[in-house]
Length: 241
Image (cartoon, rainbow, N blue to C red; front, side, top):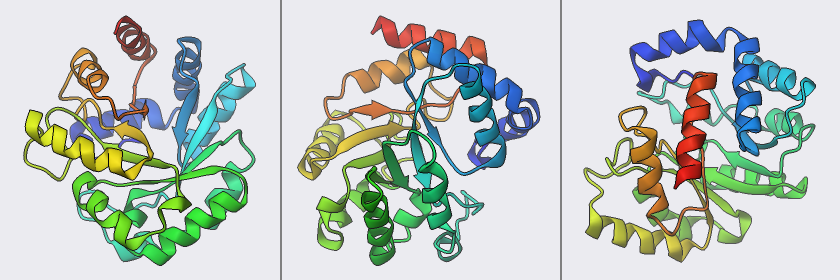
């Protein structure tokens, strides 16, 4: 997804990739061929068409679905509008795929309407998928969780995580801060999915992946690619760690 925080690159991604599902399908197939076993998807017509095309051509990937993705402006979000999305439709849609994990979108999680988040998590659990939440605020949300939601309702927690503290709700992420944050995360006893690991393109894959590899509380990560060459190079870096 060409989110606004990519700046001018968002327009390039939109024109050169997002509007051409066949190109996206090629990248998905190459990612699978290079060893990627899962893909994080949202309910988006073009992206789903690309994934379906890839599957028709032999792609064997599990889906980690983000439930409740909306068109809310990332840079100036209206959380009330985000919470009005038809999340039940998303759950029904992704139930047709091999989707072992479904995650509540960050704009719903970060609205802190805990009853709604709990309702979505319960619905996900009831259909037999594992559930989780996404947040854009790893410090604030982590501090709120235990006092506001039944921690047994979910297993996965997706958070932005990089050495620059970019798009994290902290001004820096130095060694002492990392250790304090590590303890907060370990206390949750959840499977952690790291996102924005390359600081939205500011860091190289070597820098971002090496940093993540130094952390002992991360179980999975997700990152975006825009070309076949890019995924090949990124996977080479990962396999070299």
